[in-house]
Image (cartoon, rainbow, N blue to C red):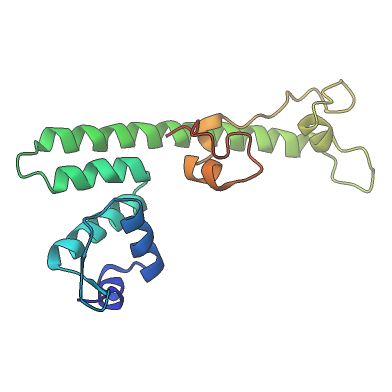
Length: 169
């Protein structure tokens, strides 16, 4: 099977498949004499697992672990279940943090008259100008660190943690 066949069957792009191969997340395909990749049914299974694991929130390192477990005939389902339940707990925490952020944003919106005035309690609050009369007594809003996806941190060249490997996951 060639890469376009695999892409069609897995729902991944050819570029994504090559990326996952470069990262060593999937078993490297054999190469024909002309250098083209030759995929097997096992590659399809690995790539499908990878795509679906990403869809439910597993990061690349977690996907690497899941692929290793998939390829280990002596794996224990308890190990897979533990990783899955860890991910559920992480998602529940993320939901809780997002809910807190939402509530803070709604409080900020309520503090703003939304009129033609240049004085804006939202801007003042976000800029750290939390003086009474400027921000309506609303505390500064800060996003919890884990509320920002680590993959986003790694790819955001303007984020202070860009490229230093200190992202959450």
